[in-house]
Image (cartoon, rainbow, N blue to C red):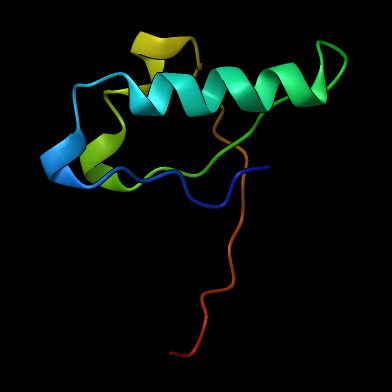
Length: 64
């Protein structure tokens, strides 16, 4: 589970996010699922790099 995966706007579209995902997958291996939560503005990006939408998460929001 990745709670956050963010790249500064100035460095986006350079393949940094894809490399972070690749490195994470190489560490965890093929027997482990990679799950992340997305900010609304980034939801269209993740299907482009191999993630699929899986709608069954629940959240109790933090107080601050």
